[in-house]
Every structure is written in C-alpha cells, then in structure tokens.
Image 1 (tube, one colour):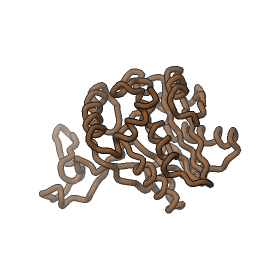
Image 2 (tube, rainbow, N blue to C red):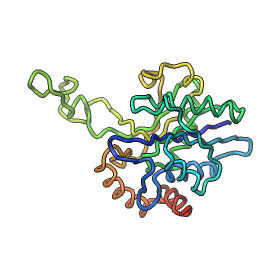
Image 3 (cartoon, helix red, strand yellow):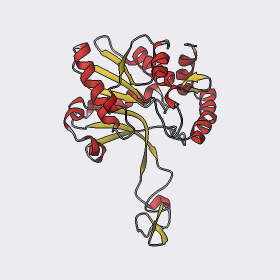
Length: 257
C-alpha cells in the first residue's frame, strides 16, 4: 500500500490571522497533524507499505515549523502562486500535491490522505479508519470525517424567507429523534482516490460518490474564528488530560519542543 499524506496551509487567513503557523496550547498547531501522521506510521504501517508526507504552503513560517518538527520524513512543496488564493478549492491544491509527489518520488499512490492543520483533535484510530474504509471501497471517490450534527434541517434549523423565519426543510416532525439523521463534515480527515482527484470536477467533488467515518464529537473541530481558537484550546486541554487516544498525539508533539 502506497499512501501520500498532505498538509496544506496558506500564508493568509481572513478569520484567524496566520492560524496555520500559530501555537495551540504552547505547541505549533501544525505539529499536531504531523504528530498524528508520525504515530500512524509507527503503529499502523506494514513492512511493505510506503508513505510519503508533503507540506504544501506559501508560508515561510509554516515551512520553518515543519522543518523543525521531530518528524523528519517531510517534504516541503512550495505552493504555486496560482493556487494561493482564498477562492481556490482545496481539492485543486491536493491534486497538485499528488502530481508533484508522483513525479518527485516516482510512486503511484493507492490513497491520498489530507489532514487539515486547523483540526488538531483527531486520533490515530480515526486516520486508520478513514484509510481502511477507502481501501475497502475503491469505487468511492473520497472518505471524509464527520460528527453527528447538533442541528437538523427538518427539526431545529431555520431560514429567513420573505420576512419570516421557517424550517429549513418543511416537516411534521415533533422531535429531533423522528427526523432523518444528519452529520457535520468536520474538516479533519479526507482519504481521496488518486484517480478521482485527477478526473472529477473539483467544484462539485463532494456532491456524490462519497463515504464517511464518524469521529468523536468535540463540538468544534476546525478553527475559523478567534472564538473557535480560544474555545478549542479549552476543549483540547480536557481531552489531552483525560483521554489517552488524544493525549498520545499531544505528547508526541510536545516531545518535539
């Protein structure tokens, strides 16, 4: 099995300035994703497996952090300028990672696994589950991570229309348990088919032919605002102090300081 791991981070961020290169509980945020990959390689890779890890960025700060982590099997890909805009779909960046890695390392990959830098609360088992499900379902374009949704468009999500508020989807359900089950994409783990990355339309990539793994619900799993950044650290400290599958990644990243 050949796996390509990707970490992709831009220099600019509108919601949280420089978030990809910030510290999180005193440790560089990017190190949590690198530590998760490092532990996956140590625990789950078989003798005949091959893993490459690339960090794709236009941020000198992120390059410095990646190069100074304790995980030495990292290749830096400097992001092309035409892929550095805030409206560029991330799938296009991951495809660029794949094509450059195939050329540089002369490997064909069975799966491309992207870990979002701003989602530090994942476990090694989550990564393994995503990879295993994707390999078990070669017809699926991507397996991504989700959590159970805290709101349901049939029951307690509303929209404004013609000066009034109404249910997002009209229904007669009187309890949330009666409504169809929905999930939140938590932007943490994506296990892609290399063929789909090359052939599928990027703008509608997640509209069809996808599967998912369900992760532990931590309330907030991506950092899109300063409030997210502060609250996530409170949640993370509790998880690192009390649940071993989270703390092992924190401890691995901490050992690199």
